Length: 244
Image (cartoon, rainbow, N blue to C red; front, side, top):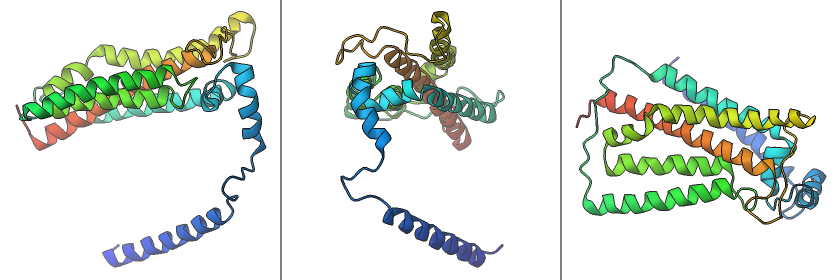
């Protein structure tokens, strides 16, 4: 197929998508007029039932926790597949990008890393109180490590992200979610029942299993993206032949 036909197909598909998008937008309710009764019920009952002030986390890790468990294992499996596809035992593992960044850049990266680390931990551990949770906090924590590669080099980044402990933490985070769900069987309750003490609303240790599951998700997401970043960087650095 030549370039002209590819362009025709693209514009035809784009026109169809634009029509569907226009029809979908047309059917949206007016601003401020939410038509979903389920959301109103959750907003008024989750604080009382689960002692969490963030309704989104109550839904994700409790009311529809089984669905979120599947999403976490999709991420786990996807990262595992990427690592299996890109890993090559014959590659030169000593390849490194030269770290020629100035002192100001390195100092700024170090300060930014500390700030992102604290913010990521806050997002992971306070998802039951404020917008955030394990998925958001885990991405922030993993992203912070990229500053090490930017300010230093791949060799330094590799020492942190290629360690077997990171792989173990990834598996531990995914397994921890399932284990919390299975622990409900010990109390003759259905899978993923919120059996832990709910605590006081507004306190960090409130919401029962929601906070525990969010922490497990944060651990799994952090480790998964660390390994993903390392695997991709190793491939790119090896392909370009940059050396230290």
